[in-house]
Every structure is written in structure tokens, then in C-alpha cells.
Amino acid sequence: MNDRHKRMRQMDIGPEQPDRRRFLRGSLALGALPLLGGCSISDEPIVEKALLQVSRFNDRVQAWLFDPEQLAPTYPESMITRPFPFNAYYPLNKVPPVDGERFRLQVGGRVADPRPWSLAELRALPQTDQVTRLICVEGWSAIGKWGGVRFSDFLERIGADLEAPYVGFRCADGYYTSIDMPTALHPQTLLTLTFDGQVLPARYGFPLKLRMPTKLGYKNPKHVEALFVTNTYPGGYWEDRGYNWFGGS
Image 1 (cartoon, rainbow, N blue to C red):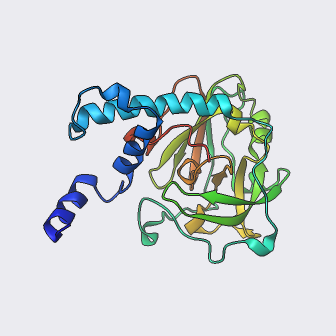
Image 2 (cartoon, helix red, strand yellow):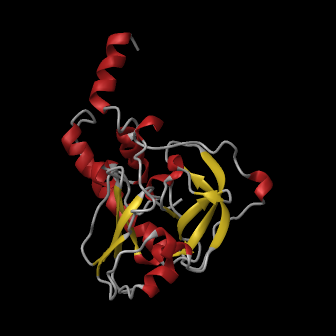
Image 3 (tube, rainbow, N blue to C red):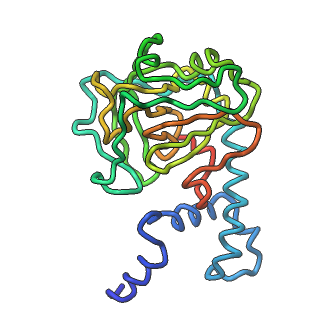
């Protein structure tokens, strides 16, 4: 591939989603070809529409296969990846600054108690930790130790409607995503406040990161500043750009 072709490919894909088309096209192996009929693979709108249909079908299949009682593997602390890699859709120098003293976690949607929570209040709740593997859709993985509040306990404390299908998240870096309620209630889903025994560093999501070892990395939002329980599909930053919504690892 010559330099001009490479530049054109970079312009076509865009700096924030280098693997989106490859991710979508990979779905062809899961049954998209019959949907395409006689369409040319170069007919991007038709191809992507078909691939998105397959992605939504995969969401339903993954949700059906998901076992809310099945635990992800855990590891000894000796296997923690150090340094743990930084990953985001922006460079490290763009990590958002958050004032921990003024921070309040906003809670909304289908909850009985929508009051905001300070970090001190969250730290006063029962804490647990886990050493689990984060798996990135780009093909790498790393083992880390996260500590914080079991998310199911927090949802019960705020009187969340546990029959609602979705929990959505908004983040200080402009990121947003959402998860299914069975994953929200999974015993290893944590609202994390620490990493490797220390206050959660900014590069890993200060002040709050939702950690789910049953989900791929892009489903684990960092710098969480608001969450809401809803009956309406909330989408997500990458999901709205064609990535699989369920995102199981």
C-alpha cells in the first residue's frame, strides 16, 4: 500500500475509530453475507446496515448465553500487569481533571433515592476488590486489581428498579455507555474507587470506574460522573458508531 493510499484510509476511518470497519466486517463471519445478497462489499451504507443488524442479533445471542452466576477468572497479585496500559479514545495528556472534593455522583432515572453521592460517602460503603483481566477489543489484555463498591449493592441502596433493562453512564471525558441489568447485578461488577490498592489514578478513571470483567474494555467506563436506570435503550459512544452493544468478553 503506497503512502497516498494509507493517508486516504486514515482519513476514511478517522483517528477515533481505527478498528470500527474491521470490527464490523468481522461480523460477516457470523452470518451477514446472506443479508447482503448481491450487494457489492464496497457499497458501504448497505454493508454497514447489514452488519449492524448482525451486531444487534449478536447482542441478543450474547444476552441469552450470559450466565449472571458465572464468575470471570481471578488471579494472584503477582500476575498484575505493571505498568498497566492506558487506553482511551484520546491521548494521556487529555485525561480530564476532576476535583475529588467537589465531585458528586449524579443518580437518576428509575431509582427511589436520586440524591448525589460524594466520594467520602461512596468510600464509607462496604468495599471489596478483585484481580481480573481486562480484555480490549483491539486484541490485547492486562490484569489489574480494582477495589470499590459492589454495584449490585449500590443499586439496591439507591432503590433502583432492578426490572429495568438498562443502566446508562455519563463520564467527565465525554464518554458514555450503557449495560444490561443482569451484568449490572453480576457479583463481580464494581463501582471502583481504587486501583492496585491506591486511590484510582486519573489515567485509570478517577474518581470512579465501572469495572466488569465479563465485558470488553470499551464497556468499562472511566471518570463516571452520572448513572441512570432506564427502560429506554441508551446506546453508547462506540455502540452508536457500530460496535456491539452487549460487548461480552
